[in-house]
Image (tube, rainbow, N blue to C red; front, side):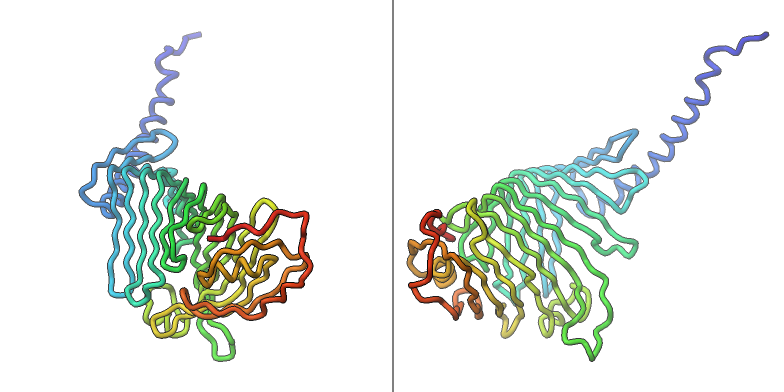
Length: 317
């Protein structure tokens, strides 16, 4: 019986590797072209064979400016990972990250986030909508016009998705939902306030996709389905309400459920800090107005029963 040379047994494996290399190289070229179009002129190194596509970009800057909206994302370095056959899903790690957003017609929407590191996953659907964008910022600083003073956190999670909505119907009291934003933060400090845990679920409604601010501002809203602040003792406050734009200002109407009403009042109105014990039964306050001009109704009398054995209410800002 004639033996097959050993080197012949390796040929199928070599052919398979060469074929895979050929296919992988094609996906690599597409990946390079896509990234170069987004951040032209930036140093770019690609690798990751055989399991993934990996691109390292030095000092990337992604900027979009328009009459309605401007955004600028930058980092000292970004590393992008993608499966060769998964063009819709990209994982991104950044260092010395900065994100700046602004709407010229709405100064209250100005926002910037800076962080030494971030991790993101971007998933696009077949229509190139954001099926899911999840970003975790490590030790971020948040400067937001709505907050009035800088905030810091140990960790901030931002999850965004576009929700394909129906066409507006005359019979519906609300416009279709167009996007959802879920926020979560640990050790969040508002100004010089105590460390808090924050969670929020925001739903954006409007007549069309979020590509025309002028049209959205006429009838769109942000529905707040629970924005909570808590410390180690428990929940301090929960806000449910609606944010609408009128006259170039964001106006809020809703309710706050809290066991620390005077603390909440002081934080919203900029009043002097108070020393307050938590109430045994949470009270519901009506809140309205705009940043810097909040109104609160339903503050209880000072004779309410308190939890004397529990820690005092935390300073919110």
